[in-house]
Image 1 (tube, rainbow over the protein chains, first blue to last red):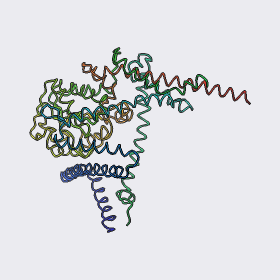
Image 2 (tube, rainbow over the protein chains, first blue to last red):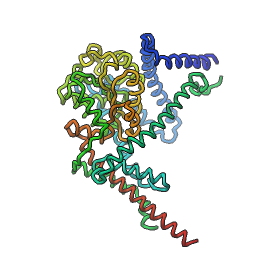
Image 3 (spheres, each protein chain N blue to C red):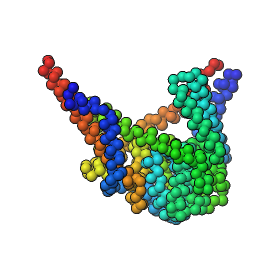
Image 4 (cartoon, chains in turn brown, yellow):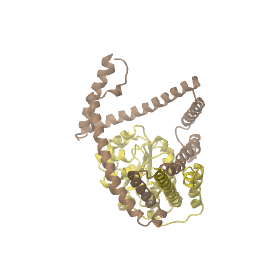
Length: 216
Length: 281
């Protein structure tokens, strides 16, 4: 059992990780064909992952409802929403419109999901304004620099700001193009080097947490 | 409690009311302030403008309804421009929750511009796999999307004539609200399959994409509602983005004023606390 649970996954990871890291540099048709096949598998696995995710979500909320945990009513709403949408979606063949006519699935999408998601995102503007008023204070020199930069960028990104502070447009472009880009690039390089190191650790079996923490 | 202390502890519903009014009033009474075109938006426009008729534009609408206010106007302006230039548009999405929106936007603009599905444009829909869909399209577009969104076989469609994979795309633009999006299109697409790539994103994402822009990994960037408004101005067909810029202007200025006010109150409190400390000692 240890072979199936530990050694075999490690072996598969080592072989596929090494082969596909090398594949990027080999433009031979056989290598390209291999990539085509494997990306197709990935798409199929992606489809199954979706089923797995939905099943897992159903299971978590079923337990909550059965045990009547705090907020179990919301789990019921989730069940009703998901099951209703799945049934309606299957009925409509997954299409929001057929020959220009809106299906029931399209109705659920357009009149429930679109406004609900839009509302959630729109509410952010109010909370950001309130949070900025309460916590965006020049408590230190660093905070003061951040505050000044934020004010310039906020003014420079809108026509009224540019009208009131004519230089803010050019200064905000400079902040975004020079200061922001260079700092972001440094972060990106750091993150990428970390990702390369982690990939090597996974390929060579040093990092094994993805195998789970079950008994050996 | 002093005035400054009371102002710092102001009821947040008052702030909500100010932001609400700053959003609503400019929408009801638009001012129409002039919009300056940034070089990153102009780059996307100029690249499309320079493409000869019948070129292939891949438009990946990688967003969901939460980002509709910012990215929907970008998509409309880009599609209007592409159809006006008689480009063949290949649209798709990497976000399953955005499929309906993507279908609506392309159908709406195509109808407005008198374009025919399958001949002038094709909507491929969504396929599972996230970033791996990009690699799959780079290898063979027809294995990634054997049929389009309406169920028609993609092989043989006039809109895809001469297109085998991403190498045959003349220009790709990803309008993204997160991952997979512009970065994924660069890492898994442009880097390997060598096509020109432009990006569009929400306002909060834009600063994060500037390193890609500065290094030439993307040739242009349409950032947020402002970017959409700039593109609408360039296309010469003002829409929701230009209309929304007045509201965004007012809310930005309101937030800046609020932040300055709160800092003035905070500094005055700190000064009086210091003075009291000196008197006490």
